Every structure is written in C-alpha cells, then in structure tokens.
Image 1: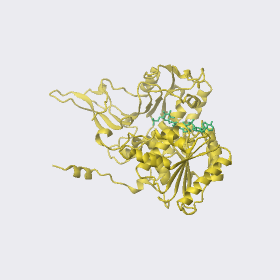
Image 2: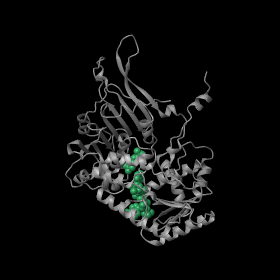
Image 3: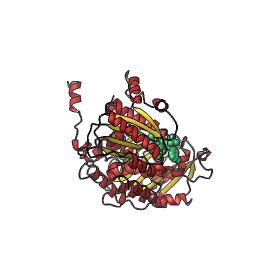
Image 4: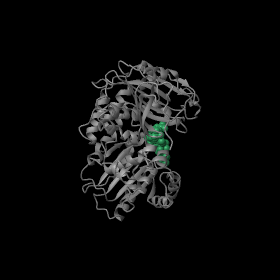
Length: 517
Ligand SMILES: NC(=O)C1=CN([C@@H]2O[C@H](COP(=O)(O)OP(=O)(O)OC[C@H]3O[C@@H](n4cnc5c(N)ncnc54)[C@H](OP(=O)(O)O)[C@@H]3O)[C@@H](O)[C@H]2O)C=CC1
Ligand SMILES: O=C1O[C@H](COP(=O)(O)O)[C@@H](O)[C@H](O)[C@H]1O
C-alpha cells in the first residue's frame, strides 16, 4: 500500500522559475516602506492592512526590513489607526496561539501621518518619517524600496502622484525603487481614463505603476493559464468548433450597502464588468503567450480586447433592484444599473460566432462568481440524451473554489440509460488544510517583487474602455433604462432570455452541489 508520505511527494508542485517572475536585479531584501494612502478608509482597513498582516505573518514581510505608514487627512494618532485596523486582522485564517502576539508586533510596525492630498506639507512629513526609518535600518541611499498604495478615490490620484514624485521619491541607483499601486475604477470612460493615465504617466514609468484588479489575484483566475495551456485535452477543444458559448458570471446577494454614493456614480458595468469580468474573459479567450513573462501575457490580452466588436443594444439587458434609491446617497431618479447581462463577441479565428455572456448583479438570490464554458451538442447523438444537458466546463471562482466538468455517463444499473454527472475538483476536498491566499495578499506581494503579470497595463486599460464607453455614454444620457427586479430574486427574466437567445442551454433536473467534507 502506498504510504501517505509517498502520496505527498508524488504530488509535490513543480515550481517553474519562469512562472513566478521575470524581473532582474531587484533586491529581495533591504529596507521596505509601505505607505497606505487613504489609510482611514474602507478598503485600507478591510483589505490592504489585513493583506499586509497575512504577508507579515507568513514571513514575506520581515520585521527588520519593513515599516508601514498610513496617510490620510483624518486627524488620528498611531494608536487610533492601529485600533481601527486591529479587528480586521482575520483571526480565522490559519490562526494559532501566536496569532495575537503576531498582531501586536505587526501593529507596532505601523505609523500614521496626517496630511492633505494636494499640498506638500504632509508629504514632506511623510518623507521625513520614511527617511528616518531607512536610516534606522542602515539602508544605503539608493537601495531602499518604497511602495505607495493609493487606497483613495481616483479623483485625487493625479495630485497624490505629483506629491509623491516631488516629495517622496527615493533614489534608485543601488537597486531601490518607488512603486505606485492604484485601485479601480481607473477612469469613468475612455477619455477620463486616458487623461488619468497621461497625468500619472508623466510622473512615473509604466514599470512603476501597478493598476490593481483584485480578480487577477484570485486562485482560480490565476489557474486559468495553467488549465488552458498545461493540459493537452483542452488545447484542441478550446475554440469555435467545439464551444457554443461562454458565460462569466458575478452575483452578489447584497446591495450597495453603505457604498451607494460611490456606486451610483459608476454602476455595475464600471464596477464589475469593465474590469473584473473583462480580465477573466481575456484569460479565457487569449492565445498562448510566447512565454510567461508579464509583457508576453499582457500582449495577448490586449489582442483579445482589440478584437471585441462593438456591443449591440439588443444584446444588453440592464436591471436595477427595487429599493436601490432608498439609500440617501442615491438620487431618487437614478438610472444606474445594479445588474447587467451583455454579449461580447470576439472577431478572430478562434472565437468568431461564440457569444461571451457577461453577467453581473447585486442584491440577487445567491453569491457566486464563475466561468461556464458550454460545449456544442454531440453530432449524431445515438443515445438521444441531448435534452439532459450539454457538456460544460465550470470554473467556480467563489465561494467554494472548484473546477468541474458536467458530462454524460451511463446510469449505473442494468438499463442502458444516460445521466448527467460530473468530474469534480472541489478545492476544499482535494486540498484539505490548504489556505488559499486572499487576492490582495498575493497581488501586494507581486508589487514588492516587481511582477506586473497580474496588473493591468495602460494599453489594456485603454482597449477595455474602448469596448464599453459608447454603451456607458448611452446609459449616462438616459437612453437605456434598467428593468426593476426584486431584491433576493434571480434578476429580470429578460436577462435569462438574452442568454438563451445567445445559445445558452439551461440544464434541467441537475444541479451541482459542492461536496461537504
Ligand atoms: N472598499 C472596497 O471594497 C473597494 C474599494 N476599491 C477602490 O479603492 C479605493 C478606496 O476605496 P474606499 O476605501 O472604499 O474609499 P473611501 O471612500 O473609504 O476613501 C478612502 C479614504 O480617502 C479619503 N477620501 C474619501 N473621499 C475623498 C475625497 N473626495 N477627496 C479626498 N479624499 C477622500 C478619506 O480619507 P481622509 O478623509 O481621512 O483623508 C477616506 O478614508 C477607491 O478607488 C475604490 O473605488 C476597489 C475595490 C473594492
Ligand atoms: O471591486 C469590487 O468587488 C467587490 C466584490 O469582490 P469579491 O472579491 O468579494 O467578489 C464588489 O462587492 C464591489 O462592488 C466592487 O467594487
């Protein structure tokens, strides 16, 4: 009988050096300052600081190298900030007896600087305190690393970047660097995104700018290239000859919850589809890159985006959940969609005629994000089993990460009848005890390592906005009205009808239930 030890050795992952990064001469050690701008805000406390804590806990941030600075206008002390963050430092994730000790040590690494986003005074104070930290760590001038994380509304990016450039940029001649992480939404349409890109581009090189899209840090999104290009059996099937349609779905079972003011300015297309779902689409549809170098991957993503044809009005359904405008920060007559289903079509040799159905909605009856690749019917079906459902390859991004394949099998027993079943790779079952890192954790580590593979390049962003801008302008001008739907429902039936018109065939009488341990 095979021992457990042998099983583990047999399935030990093979690390491909090329896979992890393609940067040269970047020091992995040395003084590191991480500056979270907008430290008083929602994202900073819920995502950025917890991700930093998890990196610290796992040894990716060394206490003898790193210092963390919070910066914002709110007048609070170091202790206030630490107190505010403390409750979000996830005790559940692989926590141990040392957890609370680790929390205290981590919090001691954080200092707060109060200042505005458009005057030099605050940034000069920030520079002073960062330099003091670097001197205390005996960091040679030109070798220190400074990471500025802009957890701020995009409206202040240009002034903040200017202040960083003028007051806080370090010398980099001994391998040091200054990097800027910017959050979405990066612009509101093509023109505003390009303006923002130009403003920041005048101050920093593209290699210093990390446009974060946290979906690119999700485990199963990162798995897409491996699945597609490291498995022989997908290679010949992944095209218009075999695939009927692809759905990329985001559903949330809660509404805008305290973020109504922000959301109403953007809507579901700018909040979810233009970035998260489109990035996923790129990874599903792109050609094999020359190598795993960031630029090679991003070159292929840009090609897909540039091959998307203009979206047709009749291939879009918008919805707004009832009660959305009850939020005092949302205007009563808001036209902002909280749900959208639309068909994207890619005009190239691989995908001509295959609809990519993008669906995103808030306040629905479930929370999930998944990619559903539906195959065409088997030609000359001798079992007459077509109506039981088509082959589908499903990648569930969340919750309960899983990859499963819906396929026909013989119903066990004496009769020769068919039934739909699945090949199921549920992560909770297959990788028991493995903690899947949070997307932000992984992406922040990439920024420290200088790996831009999972960040959005400027031309990629431009191509993404080119796809949606005409539609967004029509919605903004009130030319497109969202259909009301009930909170907790499946969304407007018109959205399902659109998917069906596009060719999606719903499987009846079968539902995949994630296995429980
Ligand atoms: N929250 C989330 O879950 C997510 C957020 N994002 C993006 O991350 C960024 C930050 O988000 P979030 O933390 O929610 O935003 P907040 O609204 O919480 O803003 C962050 C901080 O920025 C400062 N601020 C807020 N509004 C303004 C303004 N008009 N002018 C200048 N400063 C302002 C405030 O700090 P102070 O007043 O103390 O200076 C605030 O604490 C945004 O770009 C957002 O779109 C992306 C994905 C998810
Ligand atoms: O960027 C955003 O993402 C969240 C959903 O993120 P997830 O990782 O929980 O799927 C969404 O709620 C928010 O509106 C949006 O800004």
